[in-house]
Length: 332
Image 1 (cartoon, one colour):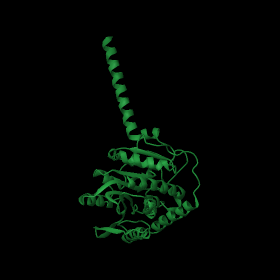
Image 2: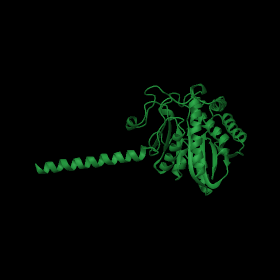
Image 3: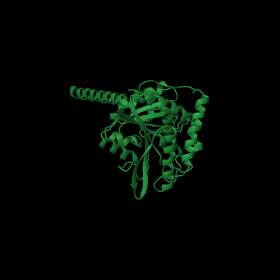
Image 4: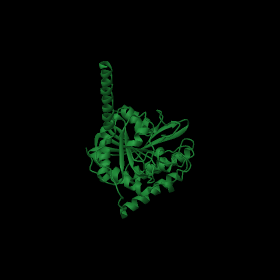
């Protein structure tokens, strides 16, 4: 009798400890500073409507090229030139980080606003998946990259702000050292550069308000996060927790869009699916800002990923919020 009681007590104590540990782990990984905006969003101002039109213009220009990849070298080169011209029009002096990939000339487009030796890097990939014009994945990210380049010169800054449009994020390069972002990260480390924060802009234009429009890679997350795909997510690996927190706090302070954040291992599906992963693997704090792409966008990686399906008002609000994130990071 007493022996059975002791066994049950030990079991209950162990269960409480396990549940307590899981609760603390979940809080560490998923609890975020600030509060996400709720309720109806404010209408765009005249200036914001003009920004929405510029964002749409960049998305349409890139998508008019069709699939942008080494399978279509002329389209890939034209995308590089579009970004180079966009940086130049923003008053920057872009340079091309070139390499050869199986006989195809490839390049990252790099531009900087100079400050201290510490670097904040903002990046987005300019290529698209096979047979896809890639409006959301990732012309939307490139359009926001160019919009932020146009506006960042007015930000008070202590740190250097680097903008990079990466080539070759999509398969067959995805997850390999041949990604444009992996090449840039390795070269930066080899040069001894001090990249203190990297923010990847990945698929920013899909926003859905219908019930159950958002899914997640783990069943547990469906209990903790919204069922509507109407938020922007900030995601990073455990080593980037402080950057995730600073980024989402600055974004939420603008009250532009609903937002969610998570600090999870890169091995969880979706968490490492962008250009932040090679930087995080080298110990550089790196965060992905995303609409979560395949977990809400039914056109992801298909020929139907076209400009007319993007939500440009939300893309504009995302740009405004991300400008505040940059302002915080470059001023620190």
